[in-house]
Image (cartoon, rainbow, N blue to C red; front, side, top):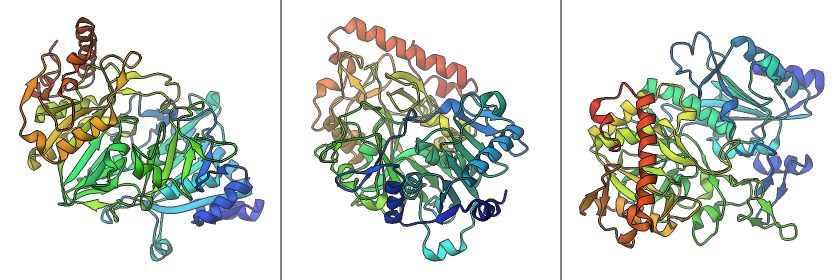
Length: 527
């Protein structure tokens, strides 16, 4: 598909102007002129994404064709769509974009490692979506721009809608990936996260063939070069906990792990802003400045100051900004081999410990399980926390079978003798509707203890349900909160709730990972 010919025809026939790699100040002018958004008090662009304030996983498809048939793990997450329906949607998107007065094209890269970098282009009808893409992907130098040839193209047309009766979709919204045509179609939704996650899906497909493990994780590095990885789904704290004044941020969401070390797939951060304040998260708070995209954040009508406590539109309020906005970011975002791995879970049932140390088999079990409580607003239709198991902490973005990624991780953990921890950033003392979330200051102290090596040498107690090794002490953390059962007033209710979660773990693993080794299967809860 020659998109250049299509855009040139649109320019000739409809006088469509295609603006390529515009500067952010110029794009901001278009945002304001087209009433796409308004400026906050610090010059961030505040936008409202309409009824779609999170991803639409039920509307995501991969085209079933000669390329994908024997490689993609088609299932309820990787839903198949025919080539005929893709071609129909492609024509519909192209016809829609060709009628626009202005289009915005960004030529960029995914992957900070030059040896595995993917050339991409993103074509938008909204100027603010193009700013979002600039913030989240890696921008080329002038020399690279002159030589740039996109390997994958994203066509984002939020005002182009599918007809489910004719287009093979579930609704008017569609995110369709064609590996054969190397094209991604996004229509019917203004939520910009679909743009970045679609490219992440492509990297998850391509990188394993290069012996590189793609990961849904954040990463940072200490002064001594010690790299830590933070795996977790949206809402578990990847961005918050990896952003620290004492460590360089490699990235907050998507990384690759090669024989040379860890690299960021992106060039920016997409941080949740609900209840954001400078005291608790100064690096993120101060990163929000001119050119940042604020999604569904309410501004004060008089001062234009963001109200991060206002969740009247969604709890999934977001800020998209460049890594350049983080004073302590590592640029270029490439580092060495990891020494610590942290699995983050936001357990809304309140029964998992704030921290536990995993052996190799437990690490594989919990990586394949990918448990968390999906928090309100992160996906369409989620209004309160619910149990979810997302293989490799990123099932919505994994075109290949999860065991491909798990086997790669297990091999790297064993060869590197890497310490792995499970950290619960969710609730303690009861369930989400009866208790409070674990205090951020306690979680930060736990992370500090992991990274400085303190938890390598303390005494542990093994719990009798989840088989987790819980440290008896952590500096600057009240020891009474380390054993979750002790935080519940009603111990019988804790036991009942813990047993329910343990059964859910067991059922998920038995259903999805029957081929796992006996040692890994046995590393799960005792029930």
